[in-house]
Image (cartoon, rainbow, N blue to C red):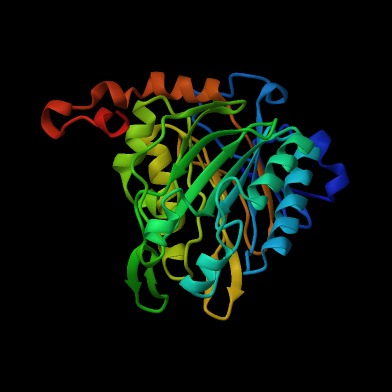
Length: 328
């Protein structure tokens, strides 16, 4: 049975036994069904808690940081070990010229603020899509869409530069030409050991390419993360379907922090940040507006599911090739 309980924020902590929690201004706790043969293997109190932050970034970088920092501090207060921020958490510009003006190197002041925030809160941070001026900025005059992972001491432990750029023309949503300002990254990153599990990094449009998620899973990922800024047309049609598909085919948790609402007169995002378990069940979800959703990561359940349904043992690379070379 699926149950919902409304509680004010100060009553949340005694109720964290539920796998999924949504926190905008009021909080919704939900207990999601699982296959009968695969009950929760551990006490929920022992399971790591992750927080997914949903925001509406604008061109105002300092205001965006204040909004994100408030959510991260709330996540830490509630006991999360890892907080996820969406693509373009730093800003959403009106045009490429503004993007270039607002972009920074990884060693710039904004990432410095987030390293201090991670240390202050004592939790890991997934900075889902940073507008990075790379070392080749002077030559290319283009940036990277860089997913930065910080540990709880504020150290950069991984960076992934988006490999699939969103150059699309969707009727009713307007054209998107990410390659006008952005260089595709050179490759995938090996999954990173975090307090929640082995984390595989991706960004937004990458979710449409199952080869990437399968390569990360074969390399050991237990959690895949797709920080995003999905549009108002593709979001309702594809967002949840794609995330659930990636979870089912890889037997991984999928964590997707998303932009929501209107960023400025030229752009709006769908929102609906969520966490999907390896069975394909949405265990936590945000709806409208900025806020948090929280979920427990049960790796015992993940391993049990993989044992009962060993799809990776049944793959036929002799028919359609292997995927290991993608992470070589």
